Amino acid sequence: MTTVCIVGDEDCEVRFELLSRETAREALTTYEFASPWENTLAVETVSLGAAVSLCNDLNWYLVRFAKRVLVREPSISEEEWLSRKLAAAVRDDEIPPEETDRFLAVYGVADGRLVEPMYVARRDGEVPEYDLREVEETVVVRVAEAEFGG
Image 1 (cartoon, rainbow, N blue to C red):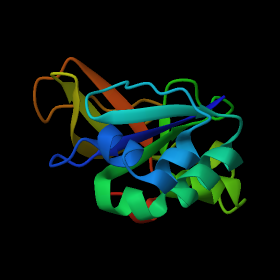
Image 2 (cartoon, rainbow, N blue to C red):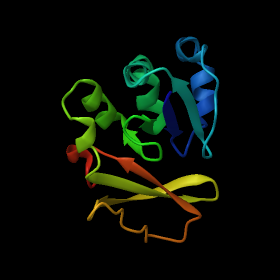
Image 3 (cartoon, rainbow, N blue to C red):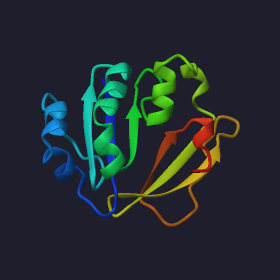
Image 4 (cartoon, rainbow, N blue to C red):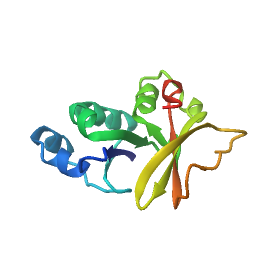
């Protein structure tokens, strides 16, 4: 199963915003919801293609209420996420899955929230340690080269 995680903007509650809009609610109606971090809405889809299609269906709402969208595809990585842009590029065969691991945005998790990313390149197969602030854990997100550095 491929997971889509919508991370809300600081000034809105993403779950409320999505589920209070009829079109978004209808697009999400067949999914069970989870919240891996505060102000997130995560759903499991059947494939990477279905995940990207769901994001495309929700695009109007994502632009307005989401800070970012993450996609976790187990055939690429069990622990690391893909940015929405990178997930779409893999789905469209623009980037081979095995070439997605170089550019990273490493997010800290503090008080249950994703906090500012540290953009890094994987070195010798290792992810550099997050050092922007004290955090409980980190979340590694693979990003497209064009997204690298923000």
